[in-house]
Image (cartoon, helix red, strand yellow):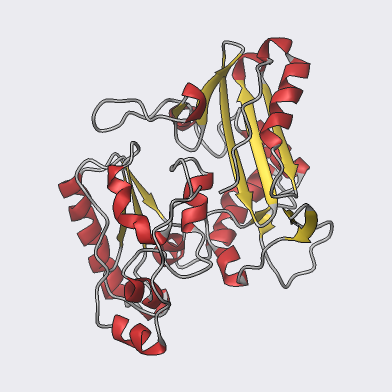
Length: 324
């Protein structure tokens, strides 16, 4: 159940043009657990009066799939975020509304960086999540090129790459979904949505094996940073960041226990694909599973394989989460 607020009528072309002269207020409060920072508001979002409101924008789907919210929120519920158990907020580097971020000047971006620093000092969020497009603005390079240079090539992830709808990619799988019990192709999204840093990667099983090996070494992350990833985050009020099944949340990992032993896990989903990774450090074991069906549950596969390797890890699988 989504419990969406009803969406207002779509903005007209005139509404979009008027949005250029308007500002989109932040969703912010003191002592948030996570403050998400985009680069600047788009015409559609400002015209609608809500963040990431353009149809097809996947911020809200990714927010839920990543475990930040217990259900899929609508853009028109953005004001609720600071009141959640895991208090969230949204701001932007630059306040000016534009059709594309390319309209911003270097002076605006520099001024926005100073303003963001002051905002963080005032509101004191535990974490600030800077959206991936800012990598390009800060470095002048496409984030996919930086991934190749700093992660994929050094680790030997030879087929890992950014999604491309145009390129011929050998061995590319297709994503599917079930509609009324019948198999259908994945839902279409604009190719431009598959060029941002909230996913949008092609990975093979061998690529993931290289990544699993890297999690045990100091490349690309030193031991101190890896340890922080797998340590429960502490919220501003002193509580441990919560996660499902009675666990906690580190930096991009759900921290739980299987058979009484520590486990680090995470899931992903997009366009008819599902993924799951589980680390079981007491056994020096990492298991991951990919599926190309939206209704699949690769987490069950990961836990079952882990239990075959180390029976002590066996635990009853969680009940499948109903589709929103």
